[in-house]
Amino acid sequence: EGHHIIFWILGGPTDLDNLTLLCERHHRLVHCGGWEVRMGGDGRPDFIPPAHLDPLRRPRRNTMHV
Image (cartoon, rainbow, N blue to C red; front, side, top):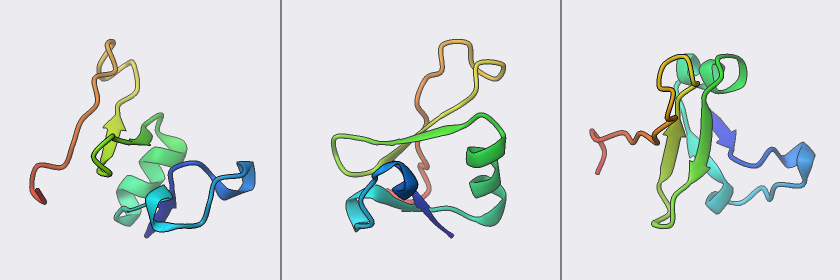
């Protein structure tokens, strides 16, 4: 599923630089589970867990698709 990093309803662009692909489960976690997504400086998404999973909210990356 396509996910707008900056939601288009909040003025985010609908271009590839503002999109990432997520499976249905992870898309739901971003919208309802406290996870956040931001685009890293290298154009790859960083996933920030909610504070109850990581109090420092350290960004995580998918290491399976380098």
